[in-house]
Image (cartoon, rainbow, N blue to C red; front, side, top):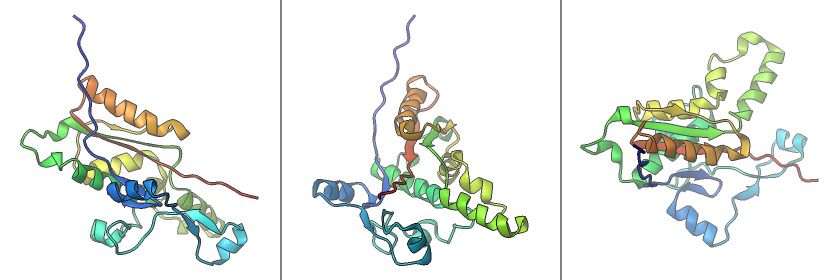
Length: 209
């Protein structure tokens, strides 16, 4: 007998972006025509690169800004690169927006998983490690590999929320977002999970001459 796939619905959204962190406030900014592109603070690296504007996630004390100490309770940059931190915070926001299903009486951690995709891990860590190796391999951080692997965003999110179901990470460039949502949907449709945190991390680098 043909089995009818289960229905899948999106119940929460979490965004960490150059327009801020959240969902409602970011949507209002998009509708209002706001831009996340701004001037970079003056520095030697900025002058050397010749790039003076960028779209970066705002850091600060406001609720729609990223504050590492407030979110994690301590500084975690030694163990987690920014793309992993952003994935963790986006997952927090998405779960809150969904009404925190992890505290439901019917929640089963073994039936909850993660599908977070990307095209590449942390470029900052990779380029920084290359410069470090020019000096001495002994100075390279033991956290280098865990900070650059694409699948570590999904892995750290599953650890943060104690999810014991599928842990999946597609590496498919600009199609990564569609693949993560599609794969998460299929995990639920086919009965491998009841809840999936799905998303993607994006680096966009453009040279304008």
